[in-house]
Amino acid sequence: MATRKDCVRTAEALQELYRENMNEWGKVYPVNFTDVVLKLATMYEQDNPQFDRIKFLYACTPETA
Image (cartoon, rainbow, N blue to C red; front, side, top):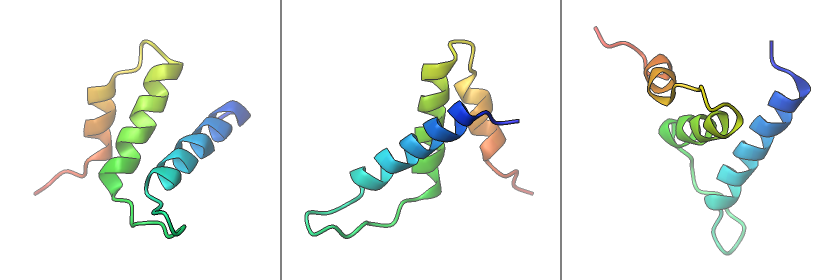
């Protein structure tokens, strides 16, 4: 279960991604799935030194048949 801290940190990571993809006129460029997953992985790594980034990235990637 996500804690309040988890929700706040997730929102902060997504806000950062939003700002990174905004142009000078305030229009936000589309963000791709990979950017979101990498941003969250970085956040989790900062919060937990035991976090396994590779395992997380594989878990976020759908299996191909």
